[in-house]
Length: 196
Image (cartoon, rainbow, N blue to C red; front, side):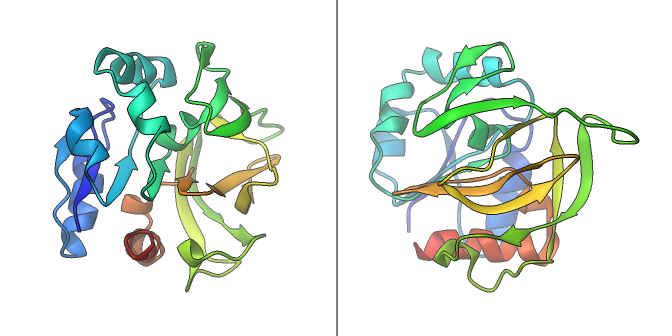
């Protein structure tokens, strides 16, 4: 097991690293394309502005490296959003692993943006990444932008409108919620990821 966390400048790097430590797995942080390409599993965390994260990845020469990875890759929160083609925040082009755009949540009467708090997941496509996680289980979200439900959606939740909570395509996966802050469910998802 050679897990690597991509240094995208996200404020959640330390908490994601600590979550893997609780699972007994070392999770070094790196912006080195050679170290990332040589890992068995890669996690792309992210908190903050998508444009800033893309700029940091570009500065480290990581765009082609990440898109070309063949091992399991998990994007977390903004890290998941970076995997899409278009990011309304900026606006800026994403990595293009997943088709489509990440747009600002529209909110609605009585709904605050950013969306912060615990929401129930609805599993729409069973996958080993979600083994032991069930519809109705709660995950912790903090975000203002989200990807629409698509053919690559594995689980959804809603904040005024349904959106993708978990996505998967080939070896790439994304969680819009924060596994590192989602208690037992979050650790289960991370453990499942390491089994892929």
